[in-house]
Image (cartoon, rainbow, N blue to C red; front, side, top):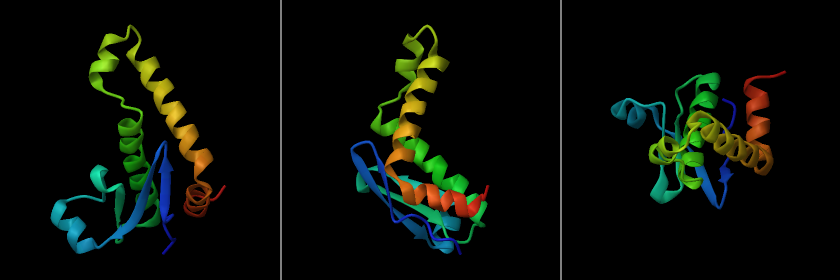
Length: 113
């Protein structure tokens, strides 16, 4: 199994990334979850590598939304909400990718160039 990064820094927050036992994940009907109050991301350890990578990116997107405080109300006030969301997510993803070389190595292992 390709190892997940141990931590992911997202803005001011550093999340611990854990393998999530398949039995627990199955009971919750999820491939992954983020625990904002514990700064923890859990990924189902039974998923194939590409699904684990996609799920990790999905959970990181939730954390970017949380750290950068992206809310539907903010987007509704903007005359170009899609552009505002793209700017916020672009900044968030750029920061995450710059701050986390282990994440980039993990993704390169899962999806080699």
